[in-house]
Length: 253
Length: 266
Image 1 (spheres, rainbow over the protein chains, first blue to last red):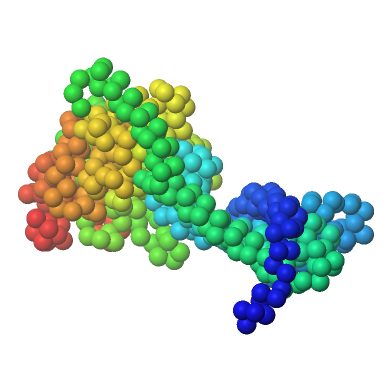
Image 2 (cartoon, rainbow over the protein chains, first blue to last red):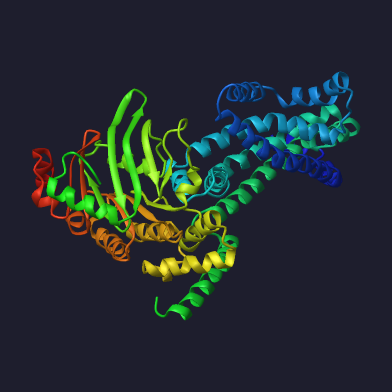
């Protein structure tokens, strides 16, 4: 077995490392732009879903359809279909981003809906009772808490997105799988090349997991973790400065 | 406060007082239904400036729902809500003030504190000031610090709610409501979620607020505190005011249901 594995030309992976890294960069760029837009779209869809019919029905229909559509189909619709029907030609990068947003907006809306519904009713009531407008209560009280709940799942969505960019080889996006295919077409070494591609996705998954954990710790109340502690220390120093000013004016605590 | 069952001599006293004192809250014929279940069957309540009104009664008697109609967290199904002379009754019909404006003049303290867990104690108060009073950031933080000092929690200003005891959280919540300079404060069972040893500090703060002359409506099960602080006392049962009266009510009430409830709790 070891002999069989060793008989492949693993050196090819190293020789082509720059091509692989370019592919990774493209996959990450498409996914990064798409996740930002998907979070906004997902939040709006979640609000639509939680509103009154017929808007809630439309949102539910959209969500259920696009959660079921494969990324491969989505990108073909956007890149070829949109061009045929409307006459607009997207670049492969744009088409990739839109294809991901169509799918992941639907997934993230469900993540946000669950998170928004998990915020106790008393939070909204307390904001309203303080004379805050409903919009302000949502933006400053409910949304930050819901986002904290949604973050780990949104991180998982990002990992899924990066993997889904592998299907964008059909429109010619130079992502990891496309790069692998190109190298394979001249070297005929699919096993080491595709294994290397898989390794890249796994590394991305680990890295995203690490970053999301750091972000989660930062959003915890009170925050923990080195980055968050530094940020909190700043915030607390600011509060202490106010406290000292007030003490100076009014005497003992 | 005016009800049919109030002792007549006391009612006469209050009628006399009412002429002299401004009415802050006037509820008339408040009805409230959830689905097909009516939980308030036409309740009247009048609160005058500086008065401390205590509302008590068994669970499910409608006392919290009644309190929540005053700042329209519950929209009454029927009846009139007047706060500081403005009518906020059910939509349609008479002129109606905006709920946001109403709430900026009415403070509320909840059973579950409802502090914002993602903000420090100071910023819980400052957010309210910035949002409701349009105070700038620095000014809001400074006023928030003063509010925390009033409840003895200035040195906990940088803590998050999760880093405070229940009693401290409730005191921050009281500071948050007071910082908006309300004309009346509503307390919805403010000590019911607290461990017994933490009840005293919250009641202490409420006593200070009462002594400052604040108009207060307090829903509570702490009948000793109610007896001490209540200028007017309302016993609710099954969605109506069963009996009410001024100071001395706890000894002078005549309704057997009231006496039975007080005997069971005290």
